[in-house]
Length: 258
Image 1 (cartoon, rainbow, N blue to C red):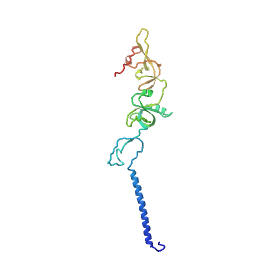
Image 2: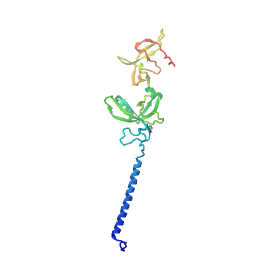
Image 3: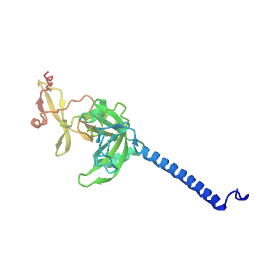
Image 4: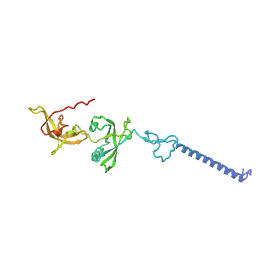
C-alpha cells in the first residue's frame, strides 16, 4: 500500500511496530505459561527411591520450605535392606581371606545362639552377603565396621532394629567339637576330663586328664583337632572338684518345669 501511495510510510511503520509488539506479548505469555507449569510440578513431590514411608512430619496447612529440619516424611528401603555391624579387628585377616574366593555369606538371627545357628539353621531370619568393609579400624573400640545386604523377602528385617549377624568365613568338615566348659587349662596346655569306664572292682566311672589340641574356639563350641575320638564323653560341670583318676557319676539333667 505504501508503494501505491494508499497509506503513508509512518502508518506502515506504526502497524509493523504494533505487530512486533503483539508477537512479543504472545511470547511473553507463552513464557509465563511455561513458568507456571514448572511451578505446578513443585506442588507434587515424588519419592526418589522405592520404600516404605514413616509418619508424616507435616499436616495440611503447615508451611513447607526446602530447609525443613525433619523433612516431610522419611522413606526407608526394605527390599533389599542393609545391616551394619562391627567385628573385632583380630578377625580381619580371616575375613579378608574368606573374601578372596567370592562373596561372604551372612546369617541374620533373632537369638543369641552362636555356632549352632549356622549349623542347625534355627533362629535364622535371613541370609545375605557382605557388601561393604570399612577401610579404617576404630581405634577407640578396636573394631571394624561392615555392612551386609539382605534380600529381606519376608520383610522380617526392619529399619532401626537389632539383629545378630554371623559371618561364615570358614567351614570345617567332620569337626570334633565340645562345649567350652569342658576345656580346662593346665601347666602343660589345654585338657579335658575324659570319662572312662569303671575299673575292675569299682562301681563308678573315673575322670582322666586328656590333653587336647584346640582349633577354632567359638562361644558355644570348641573344635578339638587332636586328643578325642567320636563317642568320647567329657566332663562339662563340676570339673573344679576333680583330679586325674577321680570317681565321677554321670547325672542326667532334669527336664524343665512347665
